[in-house]
Amino acid sequence: MTTDKSRVPVIAGPCSAESEAQVLTAARALASAGVKMFRAGVWKPRTKPGGFEGIGNRALQWLRKAKEQTGMSVATEVATATHVREAMEAGIDILWIGARTSANPFAVQEIADALAAYPQESRDRLTVLIKNPVNPDLELWIGAIERVERAGIRNLGAIHRGFSSYGRHLYRNPPKWRIPIELRRRLPGLPIYCDPSHIAGKKELVESISQQALDLGFDGLMIESHPTPEEALSDASQQLTPDALVSMLGRLRCRRGAIDSEPLEELRGRIDSIDDELLDLLAKRMRVSREIGLYKEEHGMPILQKDRYNSLMQQRVERGVSLGLDSAFVRQILAAIHEESVREQLTMRREC
Image: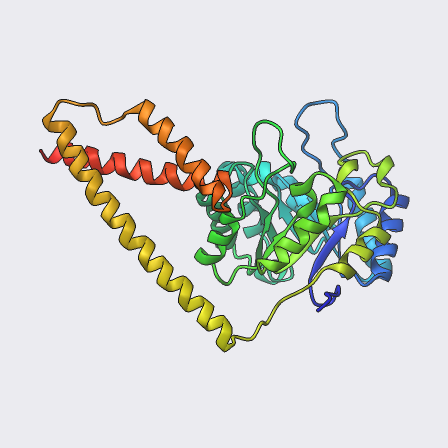
């Protein structure tokens, strides 16, 4: 089934509000395509000084005008109590807390306190979305969400925008999907949007990330769209034109509401059986690890055997790849098993 803008909530607009003409041009184009929520950054935290840091308060009036002319809800990022007050005064409908800010509990609390100062009626008209912190720290993300929730914000959601990492990667901010999946498990009623623009970093990768997010059951998308991306003052490489965005949305497939069937239940039963076998094997392995720990203790041997570990890791990864498994996945699983084996041996040594 092909998705449409009314079924999958989409927040779209330029990375930055650069001029009144740019904001209104983008807003009209997106509104005519059926997008209901328009985004633009007014205050832009930059990694280094000297870059474009946004127009500031004046640009809020451009968003207000876009709202009046198109009927769309408008959204912008806030990082301080002053930002909150100015955005609220301008009638902004949706605020989001960025990845750098959500990593700082002091900053999040400042924002929460500013929100709490408004009457509940005003807070109920507002939606606040919290991006994941730059580092893959689920507890920090949940902490930021809880601080805003305690400020009396009832329309609350999260945005997954990927995580910073060192070195060269396919994506600007690798998604590490397991973290938002765990967030969904921990906070099942919380809407989670995906920001494929910041994950991808390149416009040609935005569609594949968007599809992955929909396949994982995300509740909506936040996508950067600029009338002339090549002229954008920030994040030019990851912004789509409104026409390109609409075309992409038409190609996305929404698989919501799948109906359970007998064949699916049979496959799930096979998975459950295999999982039981895996757990039995892991338990047996740990029992052997404890026996090894006892032997090492009796013979005065250190627990860690680095050369053997490196050799076995290489052999096991090669074996896993030959079986069609991803090498990084095999390495991650083996490292976790080895860590638990070491813990078991340390426990055994303490008990002796």
